Length: 348
Image (tube, rainbow, N blue to C red):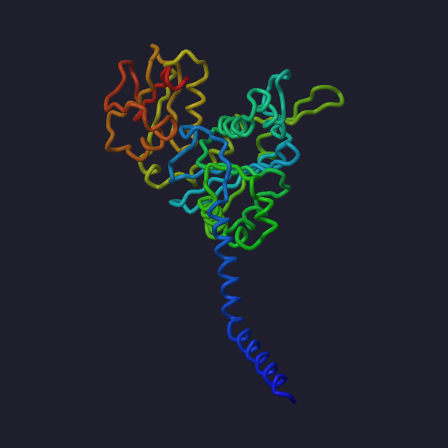
């Protein structure tokens, strides 16, 4: 063997030794680089907001309402409302059939599945806002959170089981499908946190499910060969009241508040609309009616505030935290512990 060949052999051995020596460091560098890349993608993961005004969303944490909507081919294919109470350790699921009609007027009647299209027709790019706000009014629930998934055949169970930090970081297909297709008032990390909480509550809290099809849908005969499934608001309120008592916080339950609601604006129906929202927080509605006079501003009267602070918080959450509170009774005769008078400002 010549001296040149011996030198070349020694040189190749040194290269092999160098590669083996640095290979673990190279692998660690690549793994760390990949993790940093995925974390940056997670932090930059944008959840498009439908820009629903904040005052239309609840901020009360004693009873949290979340609306989940699944859209495919421009139609709502699945919808579910979830309400939980950490105080009572109770969670209520309300799957909402999307084939039921939500208006009684034959001319303007449409099913929930077409609700986004109706909103888009009324105002371009307003379909999701319209749907969330309409469902809030239809069910009499002020939502804390909404989650809208586009181009997905998933239902709630599949979505709740799939969404996590791990799936965003390492399930490339799931992360790709979700990107630019999720709309919510929650940023992605807050959304993952909320989903994790719901999953934990479903396994550890007392879980109930309300069947709208069984209790709250009326079949309306339009002709000999046409029958339409119509949402029955009165039946829904009656059925929901059976579950509300198990969701109201113990603090509100102990206060046993009685509330009166009066419409002091020139918009008809506001008293009954807000009485529903207040009732669904767990308060007892003594009466709702028109106020004897018009009011420019909404006012909450509470003559004995020390005994109803938790209930007052809920009512302010319904009408807005900027509403005036007076520790007295209005000028006309009332008997409620809290009297809510809706003014022209809230009708706007």
